Length: 204
Image 1 (spheres, rainbow, N blue to C red):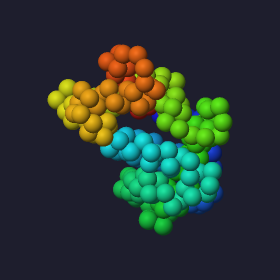
Image 2 (spheres, rainbow, N blue to C red):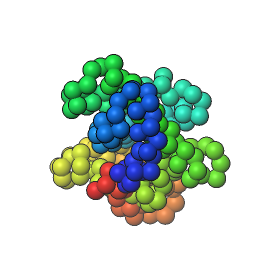
Image 3 (spheres, rainbow, N blue to C red):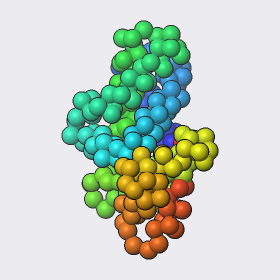
């Protein structure tokens, strides 16, 4: 799903990168896959640590003009800068301008999509599930489990982390399902649906 979102917001990011960093359009286009990889790594890191509130804070900071001072944004920007320098051989000064302007544009575009998803201007966890998870609020953790653990071996621990360690793996699934899907119904069924969507986000 993230690759499709990048197609939608990438045009504005290209314009920002070329105008702010003073590089060619071809160089800017080469940076977009690096931006996608950096964003994927950053989002995955926050989700596996259970920091949904932190992600909400990053997306909500766009409207208030505080994105540049957001810690999560800064860490993703740092990843992007390193990929630009190591992958394209550009100096830190250029990489910093490109990463800052390009990522600001991308996250701003994502924030607008999250805002448009709701009934008001607020961004919450359900918006992240609907937009980044491809409209399936029952699935934004599935492909992530396989992608991070490489199989069933570490799934229990990962679920425990995502759930904030609440009651171990089994309890964690039920807690996360209840939190993200609003409670009610059979927690096991919810958990089954829950183990399906960050795969969409990462194009799995």
